[in-house]
Image (cartoon, rainbow, N blue to C red):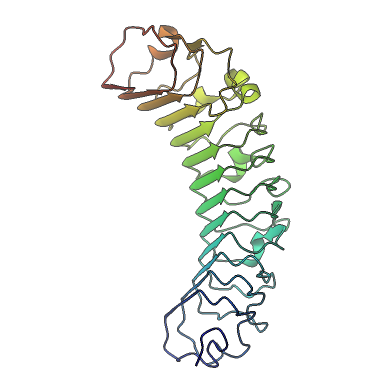
Length: 307
């Protein structure tokens, strides 16, 4: 039996985990192959470059984890057949996928989407609430929008968006719709030039952001000082276009709760401002990187200074 010609006509009934890798001639998974299995919880499909179809009858209702990697031709089925799916990861796959429908996954707690070159947006029906805990989107060059009106995920604790050059805004109404958000990463998204009206969620604990010149110019309007739970804050300017920043941070910019502050990639930063740092009584670590002109430190108590 050649694996490129025949996959499985019928899976063993007690199979719990299935990993398919390197089926270079496989175009579809056989309908009926999963009908007699009620135990399969994890399915990983990797490096099947011509695979186009999952079983038309739908995936098993027992499936909890699905990973799809390097399957560019796969047409991701968007019919509601994911009643038990808890974790979904799609990487370098599903080139036909343009809008990702979140509300067909009633139990999904982890969603990772990476290198899906044609995906433009996430969508969700009005009035629908998501059970997501973690959402990660990376290296999607045409991703432009979160759902209209915001991301209704009251349990979301982590949001990470990286290398999405066309994205212009974070989800709307974050302060209302994402009350549990604790970790936020926004990196290499140069078109994001403002934060949503209402600001960031107040329970935010960790915030990592790669800023554009326009976004950083409005930093006093971010409302960071209102984030009483924020402990880790890392600023970077990978593009190096924040040429006007010579002193940082301004007075009343940062919250008193910070224990770690990172600053990287500011080519003309020359000094740290005592007025912006002296109230940070919980600060233990200060990270400074790629700030070649920094030559003046204010005097304040600090546990660690790392260059």
